[in-house]
Length: 186
Image (tube, rainbow, N blue to C red):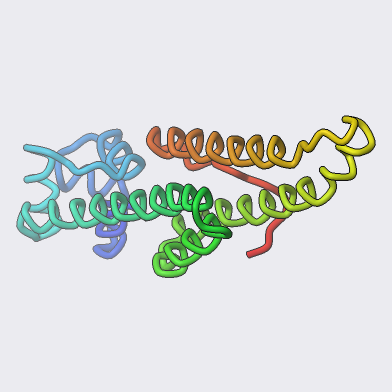
């Protein structure tokens, strides 16, 4: 629920009543509620008067929400970037994101996206392990005993790094629709 809508409903006003009491247009009230953006200038003063609070108090409510959003975004980015630890630490791509996710999962957004990222990493490890296990047999059968296990490992690692980079770019654009896989482990 948005801040303006929450305060309006606590005071028992409809959008039309708030528009009448504040002198703002109904469209302005609707826009403020749908965008949840901090009102500025005259709009802030008028709403503060109707809500019987200081403009600074109303501003602080919006700033706390913005601070929470930034904190959630940082947590999600940390979960994603901690995956890179798999290059030097076996299972680091699961362990470190799992720790960061567990500490920050009180937020619904961090919980959901963290789960998706960790689930992808679990699936990636399972597939890479299977490919590494069968690569000696495939190399004997099709490649005249040429060892392909290092190629499989390199391609698997490169693929995972690309996934991390693409996910980081999406998160930077505030696109939270990342790594939606049908298989869930956590």
